[in-house]
Length: 387
Image (cartoon, rainbow, N blue to C red; front, side, top):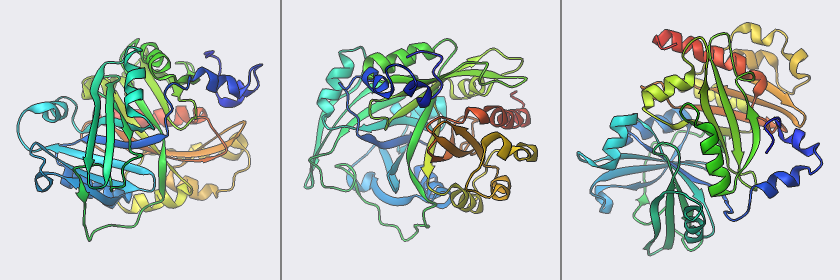
């Protein structure tokens, strides 16, 4: 895909049109959506309480000693189509401990919902993917699930989940998580995209991986000229599967006067990994208002950002005063506009954070907000002494 294409509208205006994009994303790996995201964390019970309280997730399922699992415990939380799995080891040693020791709390698994997990494994591994989990049938009284998996950047893995023959709650081996404490949701609907940070000069390698191994197409490319401030810069490409349900922007550092947010992430995460999860809402003002009341901290946007907002983005439905109050960013493309806001890092290391996004037609990723966003991140870096 041509590097100069910056959004879907640019592509539609080419000779081949939008169909060319999805032809490039070969359909040997049809993906139905994001099935779940699993984080390895130091204390799953307490992390689950945080995600329920602050983000409005609901208790769904549990696995641990009470279900016959001896080495780890997992809490499953759900909000609309978003499912998070929080996993903590129950003893010393092993994969989960090693991951937490090296990276801190972070995303280990991005699970993708497929119709045929065996075929997904065969198609990706024969194209060069490193196997993580061979096709495995897991069953209980509610039917069976087949899962398989491959490695991606860093220690992050994709697990393919085939659940068409399963009527249970989540997966075999899990039981319903009964809890009287289930705060109201905050209006989060689904995962819009997930962003990976990779090392110097590695962006092309991993974009090529998604193109060759998983049949994705590059839909947007940003250079360091697009994403830079006075002090820092980065480069990014957005990879999408054929139906557009799965989008993975890949970031790498670029040379600047000071250490960029990507470099800071790589230093503290000790390698490549998932930087942030973008979650969609239908009413960002209401969602962010509730999250703030529940203690979620967002990046600060200077008041001046809003002074000429309508001149930059045109007419919008929302009250600018409310957007200013909550620090919500706005950007427009040829399809419409979007509203977005970014939390501060939600773990102790300056690594993972969340984005809340509401799309009103726009299919882009907020390039007009990059300078304001990255200056906000630089203020956080300066406070940490890592800029």
